[in-house]
Amino acid sequence: MKASQEQQHPPQADCSASTQRAARPVRTHRSTSGRPVAAAVWAGAAGTLCWLLASGETRAAVDAAPWLVLVSWFVYVAQWLPCLRVDGDGFALINGLRDHRIPFDTVQDVEVRYAVAVRAAGKKYVSWGAPTPPGSFESGFEHVSDLKSRPHSILPSNERLNQPAVTTGRDEIAQAWQDARAAGLRSSDGTVTTTWNRPMVALGVVVLLWVIAAQLF
Image 1 (cartoon, helix red, strand yellow):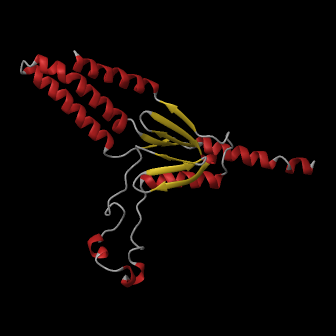
Image 2 (spheres, one colour):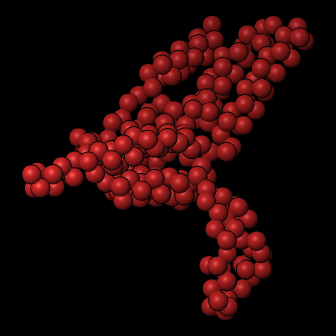
């Protein structure tokens, strides 16, 4: 009976780890400039059409409409839609036209530089919508102008390294993978799933054909 009871402990631990992974909330990370840029472009496109129509330039408005819609579609795909989501099982890179689902157990490395890139299953997947690098003040360098003027070798007491750290969304992306490894990676089929955003692709084709038709006729 004692041996039987001891054999029941590992499944309980696995169940606990699985429950912890499932309980992790889905976190969505975006570039801070992406959506404001898209909104500004849309406002400009709508304002241009309204101005042309209010001025009685109906023909000019008709000629400009397909181009403005094409630009609006492009900023939606390239600026508004892209993001990086993290859940208990892995990363989801939403890149506008193509999305990548990357389980944690396929991840080999997470590069957090100017762009966030995930190396998984022998390939490199770059996120279009992950947060961009913070500025020097956001990183905790309160006296950056003074520190940058000094050589590394003469900084007393590692002054540059002792500045207060600030956790950013980019830090959380890499930390999520480290936490998943520490908690135990959930087994998957070992592949990264890539899918096309078919509605956006179809809409882009329609708008592009509209632009071509407007130029021909």
